[in-house]
Length: 407
Image (cartoon, rainbow, N blue to C red; front, side, top):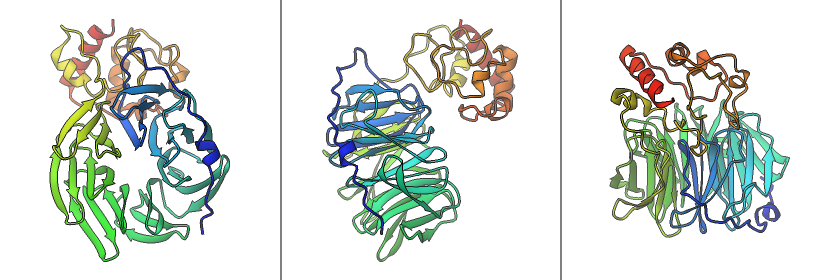
């Protein structure tokens, strides 16, 4: 039997009340994770920031503490929030946020991609293939069984359930295999008598005492699930969010998103649905009408007069990079003065070990090589997402755009 961790002393520390930001806050890159609690929400992104939000969607505070992308967020009932990500650390935050966490849980040997809680019991899973049940900082039960990364966790009616890239669902602490889908399990949510599991094939499977039912969302992978009061929200890489009455298996409506992946979902106590994704914007929706209630600031508009075809190609980059040196922090360094600049030389930016070597000077030839070979080949070890440009016309347009826009 899993020993129940008592982290209340850490999680119920007095919150640090922050002054309202002097200018609108927003993520400087894709929003990868989201959690909603009774006093508001917290989101994490590729820009390494955790942003704390009031219930009405107003930003309270941005904490830039993690050393890498934030991949998982958790609302802890009666306490605060937890965040985790690429740096392998789990940060525990007070309910309305603080510049730095109250406590840190460390032990995973790689990125942490899943968090779950039951009361003050916290569970985590990550790239090292382990599930951990935390008693205190530095003290956790380490559970092994998955053959590969753990991608999702949830406390269901029978206990802690994990989903992995190996296509299995496991029940802990026994490690019993509840199901084998033969494809990665990408998201989990608790049902009153079972568990909902999202898959890479675009199907949500409902595992209940009477068997398994399927909700066919689409052909693209499911990346996030949320359940509240008979409603199940499922989002995918296509950018839309499907709302189902899960008990009868009836599709209510589809929320039309930005056309980019919606990586994170969360229902607020009042029933409002929060979403965040690749366009770096958080939206609050009324699920009864299917209309957005509010959204956070989007990326700044491009200056006029730039190459239009290059600007179109640039859209894949603007979620992580700013063109101005005075822009708020983003997932990647700003590109002002790019050509002639040595790799890894923007002051204050936390580069990966590879880019910090500074052995490449950016010019049209090296930028072209970056996107021809791909970042994983040209600068192995970088945190930059893998992307390539194989069309010579698109490459030429992007270089024209950068030449104009980064002067």
